Structures are given as structure tokens and as C-alpha cells.
Length: 467
Image (cartoon, rainbow, N blue to C red; front, side, top):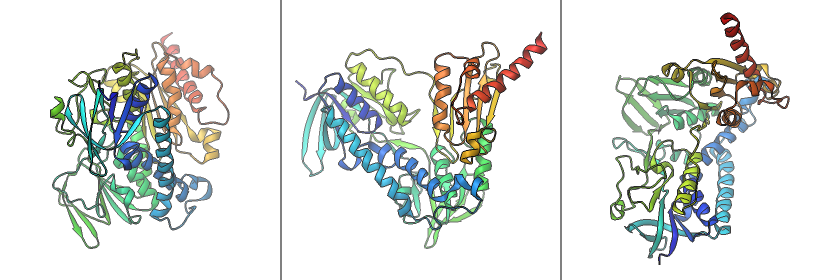
């Protein structure tokens, strides 16, 4: 008889939810993770610390209040790394306690150490003291997550040349910073450091950034970041990064040279699978360390599952949680619904971006007709109260059945607001529901009614011409 019904490798969002879901179904469950990484990369170097850092930046710089109190307004004049990390350390510590409590309360055994496969049902646990023990299980869930990808030609030192994990250990706020890569992580950190007063240069080999987002939203973000003195170098590739006593010199293939205190690479992520001895379990990972799974998150070995960033796209904490729960239910023979196709995307730049559904460009490519309804925060009483004159909510509406085809939001609270649109879309609602609904006043949520009225006015003009 195996030691456990389910053994989970990794305690990040996907691993936690898989373990707790199986435990709720009465199974004997264990989780393996390093003692300093309970909660996974998401909690220690990824989602939680970076979003907490963002809140600290917004609060201490007073950036969002400057429309009200003037462009020179700052809550604290000389912001140090200690000011920023104090909040991060507090939140991470509290979250670790919450996760440990949840696992304990659900009688999930937590083993401190790292695991590697001995065979497809046995894991060798290397404990922190050097001792090794073996754990067997009927089902195994791989939820080991990812680490930042590091180009082999770059000499990372964690001080001058960094990846996104090292940012949290900076000794001081850099006066100048080069960010290589204009993806989600790169743009989030670019906006944070720009808000702190760093002179930021973003180098991206593609011709643009955040190509999954609405074009107008991306243009608005570029405008705001340029206003904070961010320089963009699109269509440029880094040839070399030279470390010098006073900083680093980034040399581009075009011949440009960019001096800066610090260079941060944001070049995607690599699956944490190299130490798992996957071959002993009959598994393989691709060149980026990712494991292939089916619609139930089963690997090619049916009793071994994989969830979260280690399986690749969409690589979000929110989707990892659902994947973990779905994998556990399937392993336990419990019915589980398929994850809804509508996945909200949240990007924690300054200001925030969030969207659900298709963009205008995608609808045009798909030859789907649509009408646009827009609400601007400056036209909302709540927008004036909080000092956000730049935010915008956009609804894409089908003129045929009046359903919502996409919702795009840019500004304060965007990642929260998007769920109203997600719910209406998920339940097949129409723009008329938003027109007739009563929203609290003054709120940002009222933007849905304003945008819905704008869209229906446009639809009415179409109908009048067609009559």
C-alpha cells in the first residue's frame, strides 16, 4: 500500500489547491517543498512580492494623487529599498502562515526538502539535514513552477545584472535601469521603477509590447510611461552587457550603447524540472522545462499530473489554482467542470491593465462585426474623487445579438473591475443588462453603465440608418 493517495511536488498556487482539494475528498495527501519556499515562487519572488512592491511604490511616491495635489507631491522624499521591502516581507510572512495553516487544518503532511523520481510511483525526498527518505503515492502531481530564463551569454551577478527574482534583493533604488524584454513582467517593473524616479530604458526585439492587449490601451500605457521618462528601444537586440565598476553598459546590435546602474533581464521563464529525474518516471520535458498534459492535466503517465507554470501557457497563479483543483478531482474520480474559456488577464503596470474576451484587432481578423462603448474615468465622479483622469473602460458589443465580445480596462482598479464584464459575458448577458442595472454612485463600476449607454447609442444610430 502506498504511503499516500496523492503526493504533490511544490506548494505554489497549483500545488496548494491540488493538495487541499484531494484532502477535502478524504484522501491521504502530502506536499514536498523547500522550507524557505512554502507558497512557491508565486509567494516568494513572483506574484505576491511584486504586487506588494507595486502598492508600496504607489503609496510612498504619491503618484496617483498628483493630479489632485500637484506634480511635486510625494509622501516620502527619499524612498529606500528598506521602505519598499518592509511591506513585502510583512505580506509574504503572513501569507506563509496562512498556507501552513490551511495545509495543517486539512491534515496535509508537509515535507521540507526537494523530491526526485525513483520510479513512477516513488519520490526520493532529500531533507534539509542531508537525510534521504522515500515516499510512495497512488497519484503524483508535479507543481514545481518556473524560474527566470537566463541567456547563457549573460553573466548574471545578482547586483548589477539581474533577473526578475533578483530585483527584490537590490541594495538601493537605481538611478538608471535597462530592462531587456517588454513582456508583462518587464513592463510591470519598468513602471514601478519609473514611478520611483529611475531613468528606465526598455529594450525589446519585437516591434511593440503587450501584443495581446487592446492597441489603444497599449498606446495609453506607452504615453504614461514616456511621461515618467521611460525610453523604448523597439526592434533592438542586445549584443552584449558589460559590467563596469560604476554600473553596466548594454551594447545593442545596432551599435547603440546604454549606460545604467543596473540591467534586468525579463526573458521568459524556464520550468523547474531539471532536478526531478523525470526519465525515471517515464516523462520528458521540452527545451524550456515544460511538461505536456492532456485536458485533465495528466502527463503521458496517467497517474502523474502536472499543473501551473510548469505546463506553460497561460502560466498565471489564477489558472494554476483551477488546474490544481481540476487535477485533484480527476485523480479522485470526482466530477469537475471544464475551466471556462473566458480567462481574465491582469497586468499590474502603473496604471493597471485588464481584459477579458477578444480585442478589436482580433475581432476584425475574425470578421466579427462589433460596436464600441467607452467610459472615461474623468467623466465619472469617482474618477475625479480618486484623481484618476486617465482611466478608461471599453466594451466591444455584437450588433447582432448585443452580447459582449470583449471588455478592456486601463486605470485604477482595472483588475477588479474586469470581473463584472467577465460575469456578464460568462452568463451570456447583453449590453442591455448593463444599461438597465443600477450601480452604486459614485463608483468606478458605474463605468460599465456609461460605456453600455455609449454602445447602445451607437447601435441605435445603426438601426436608424437601416430603417
